Image: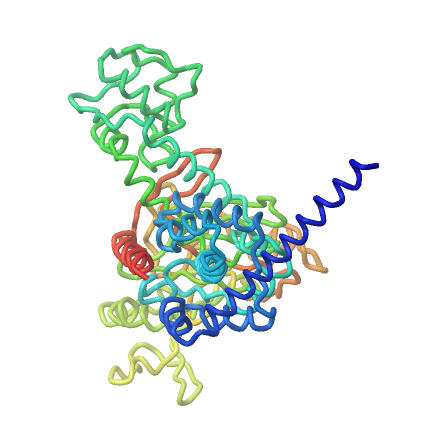
Length: 530
């Protein structure tokens, strides 16, 4: 009985001390926020001071963070390092030093600055470090997700956890795999052998060379050579050939298993450069919403691929052709509304000026040969090439009729947007077998358009079979079909991604990475100096 009384007394004393501690901390928070000098310092130092001030006033200056949340915040900051952020930017070292202080003034300051850190992290994870087209790039047109700092602080107070921050990271398997690979590469930087392979002559199956020992080591750490196949041998055997082919495949090189000059140059790329590029692509991922939708069409321009995904299941993956370097396909997102089978093609302004009008002037039979009709918008009548008033050539509408020779092929997929961009079939099939496929005037050509149409229309209440679609195609009659289920289309630009557990590297066809890295590094520097 005495022991129970003793335990009860100890608990009462502990609770009283905790209560007194809370009162003392509350008092210090009040003093920091209400003292005119302190307020001025905080207002200048904290981007989100107004929201933080409102939170604590509405909460009667009671603390928001408990011990578990303190530790969770510090842990989250440590895990951010591989993302390319100096944790001093938020300011990790400052929070860490205050964490061990017993002084209530320091604890109050930790509270206030931890709110600033939380909101900075929230904004960063939700929208990325670069928040406008000026820094992201002129052809990047992705909307920022709405951000209400005060509301997020109230949600933090209510949940007593970082759950809403953690849920901001894209809930999309390709992103999750990419982020895991970045963490792995970052953690194993010291294990990677940075010694350079020296190219002398091409090496292949059956050859012997001392450099093959280094090649084995590099391919092992890059994930192409399995550990049980990693022999300390200078022989170019079948296992090494298969590993090299895999490396070449995921770098869009000719996968011939020959160690040539280009393969050596690619293998010699420093791991730090690979990680830095991964950090840029992780930034690009943050420009997308955390939830992409249950039904999406995701085109990665740098990979020259488009994937149709529903409820995390891959329905179709196909090769694409994107815009030329001087006619870049923009990055944006819209909902696909309908498809046109046997479409007509109204020539867009850029193609009209740069291609069609010069061609008409060069050849008198160009219009008939390409099945293009010219509509005089002032009269509503079609005119011949000879009747075109060249002083007002741009005031006509130029329409190519349906058929196999139509520039859009036999089907186009419309997601209304401001950029005249859509998916479509093409009579130019010769580009699809190529590794690099930037040949269009901006729109995205599909290698399997009818397969995509068949899948999309299978979800309509009036389902269309492959035979139904073929019948419409043969008729050469333009047929518009609204989609009952409308996938969200994302056209993005990611120069790296993870497939089959390995990092794939794609060419920076539009040379975006250089400017993006400068903007990213500058933004990091500015964040660190705050």
